[in-house]
Amino acid sequence: MADEARETLLEEKEDSNCPGCNIDRLKQEQRGIPYIHLSFIWLVSLCTALPISSLFPYLYFMIRDFHVAKKEEDIGFYAGFVASSFMIGRALTSILWGKLADRYGRKPIILMGTFSVIIFNTLFGLSTSFWFAISVRFLLGCVNCLLGVIRAYASEVVSEEYHALSLSVVSTSRGIGLIIGPAIGGYLAQPAEKYPSLFSLDSIFGSFPYFLPSLVISLYATGALIACWWLPETLHTRCKIAHERLNPNKPEYSTNELNDDGSRGRELDDQSIQSKPSLLRNRPLMAVIIVYCVFSLQEIAYSEIFSLWAVSDTSYGGLGFSSQDVGQVLAISGLGLLLFQLMVYPPMEKTLGLLVVIRLSAVLLIPLLSCYPSIASLSGLTLHLVINCASILKNALSISLVTGLFILLNKAVPQSQRGAANGISMTAMSIFKSFGPAGGGILFSWAQKRQIATFLPGDEMVFFVLNLVQLVGLILTFIPYISHNQ
Image 1: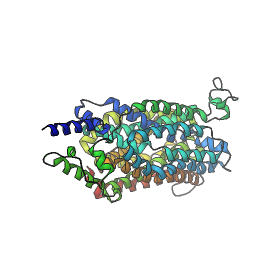
Image 2 (image 1 turned 90 degrees about the horizontal axis):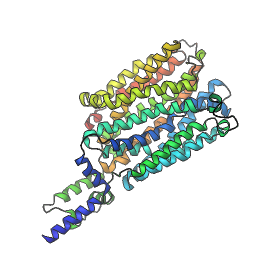
Image 3 (image 1 turned 120 degrees about the horizontal axis):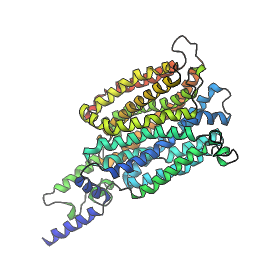
Image 4 (image 1 turned 135 degrees about the vertical axis):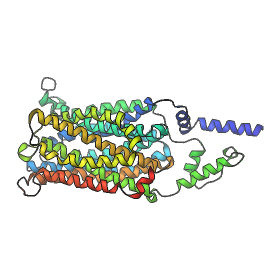
């Protein structure tokens, strides 16, 4: 009896020192919505989204100031490569960061990724040449490992009851970042020209006209880094689960790792077995990743094309907006997106189911994008009203797609493989997204040169191609393996 009591005390002590076990106990005791944990998720997700989206309103003008494009129609071509360099870097390292997160914990990887935003995003604002801008964006992508890890973290830090809400916060924060980021870029780029009473042409903001938006985002990342110091770890690191995860081929257990009836040993053996299969052979996981990649390609291509289309001259079928106008349009849709994701999406997902929400969103996006070329014929208040409504609806439907796929992806794997699984998805998604801005820029540049074509002239061709990609994604949602994750 004394030995059993001592073994129980040792087991309790071991578990109490394990952050993963502590989180599991907190989830069991959890009552109500875990606002503190959701706040951490929000901070980190926003931190990874802002550097991606903030450059879209001013990238056109930055490339123009680099003097690499011989013609105005070629600016979109070069702009696409700057935007794509980030995704190429992230594609090369996402699996590595995912595996490190599975071995050493989510928190250190999140802290490292947040710190990288501070350094490389600041350097991007100081770019004075096309190749320096590409190099810094590439390095930022290589070390910015936040999105995949925070998705795994979001599914672990709350009880299963709040999984939809938690991953919805990831998508919402990222979606808000894709809106606030352009607002920051649109309002704060070229401050010496827009606000001469506040910023002198002789100041650093006059010499580096695109430094201010990068500086503001880096300051936010600094605050997020400080806040994340108190981020609770979710990975099991000091318990029997951690032992099995780190030593899957060593079945030996100490006496305090087995119950009298051997049930604990069987449970650990099951975990060991689950950790061995290759993720690449997990067909439900691979099916979700394929669909996610197609929709991600469409999403990033749309973001690139929308910003270029909005600032291009009306003679080329554009809206003739300034960078400030683009930032304003994207920022206005932020509040609607926030309310939709926090108040509408969770009950809608429970009522209709994940696959229905994903497919319905994909279907509705096709006619919506078909209407965009017609919006260019509007003007004045009507133009601003219609483009804002269309932007809100577009973002709400896109985020619904992504949130549903996030949930399906995390359901397809156990915790011990969740970081690696999200790393694989980030690698595949980044590869697809690396083609998005470059392809979108090339497509947009080509479309501007065929304004008098008989078949889909000008921007009609651009949005037609976007809808083709959307249609492919919709068809792929009917892959049988995807329904296995529900």
